[in-house]
Image (tube, rainbow, N blue to C red):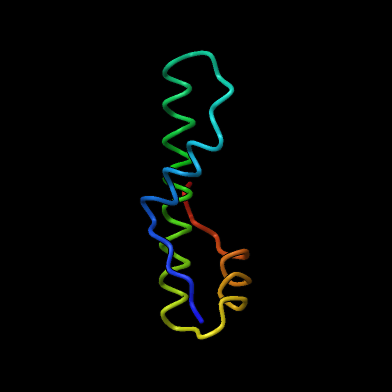
Length: 71
């Protein structure tokens, strides 16, 4: 059984649940954007893997070792 995760909703939830600790508006925006992109790409990666797997546990293990190559 596969779990479907909407990348946009997931990324919004992650950013909402993890507010920036910075005080500067630009730093807050940068932190939030970086977190949003990371969460979105992770959810996309999960979705791509889950379409090729039947077992959600296998997909979660694969996502844990995924390098998002953001740098």
